[in-house]
Length: 597
Image 1 (cartoon, rainbow, N blue to C red):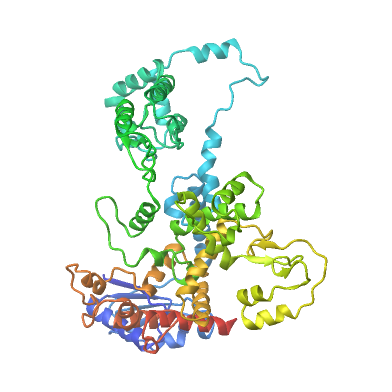
Image 2: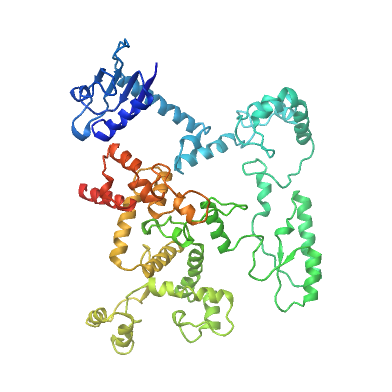
């Protein structure tokens, strides 16, 4: 007996009926079971004899119009004798759903299957991830009265045994945290009868002898604090003499002997000023056995800003150290905010400038500080920071600070107090030349018409996007990206419509990976055949479903007959003839959403 089962999600249109007839003709089943026909009993009976199946048993659907739901229908051949028994399934289905939810919840709570069931980087996830550390931490060893008794000391002083090693091994989760050899605990548990003696002997040798941690410990290991002792970036300054170089070498050697760690000289670098003679520099380099670099090269092997951008881009597009992967758009487009059509990745060049801008702000708002007085004395002794020039042979620090001044010129505001920045001091009146230079004519005219008083505090330079008016790196970065986006935009109306579209797009409750795939489809970043072919990948650019046109986003989701059938047979019952691109479809969804609101 051949049985055909199909969830048709609506049998009320001709395309679905035609597809069902084709299935029956090609499969030649004895019994056909269709769910979610969304038809009433009388409507189901119209399909008696469909594909030569004249016995029919329909189940009434619930609801009316677009709110119709459920319904079942069974067809079978005349020569078969079937008895249909009905049972109430709603309670059973609800119970199954609740049991499944409970199973998923316990799976998440046990952390055994989080990656299978979880999909968001939520606060709940982080709580569960750190719960084991708190539960397993041994804070102290005392009895109920807060004492360490002689019996306790005796137990602690006993040598470790093979039985304890075996007990600890079999308490480990079988498939979590594989070792350095890639083998999980399951391997050792399964073959303990074969390798148990050798593994136990090796563990006991480590536990019962003096053990100094070496490089190679992983995150989460109880001994991992030793690993990170040398991970803090350290810069050692000294005179360029052999005596001080030898002193540094002695200190590092003493550290290695005391901690059991080894200095990674492959990531250690030596730099000297231009006043150090080449012969002396080479002698020091030979003594310390480190590489020589320029003043602004990589430090301790850390990547530059450009390197970080490249690494993130390569990771996002699926590349690694051996394979670059196909980058479907520029890094600058990915760094655009989500309301601008990007992914909101951080542009480290702009973020670095925002960090440097903190120094500009401190110099300007705290002129009495030591660093502000030094920079003023060297670079702008007769002017303000806003009017400062680069000067003769400027330092790298001053050049970097000066490059951020445009951010404050365009992003900062003056909070008027006594108006001293814009008013003549001796005669109470506006500085007309400055007002007309800073503001447009209509705004300048309105300002000059304001009568002036004689009281008020001093004018303050204000950062408008923070509550206290103080500049922050976060707000500086956002302001910088907004200014760059406004410079690229063709009109403010286009920017507003684009922001509205993407705000609606990203606010849906779909899973993040589904929204990202949809974003790639709208932007044309999916690895479809036409685009792969244009990148000289050896593929047939034709559509695999209809073989009539090339496979791209608009054809795959809109114009392909298979796509049209799916859209029309869905609960939306959309006619794709009204749309020419995938983006137009989502613009129509946005308009429909606005009408409902």
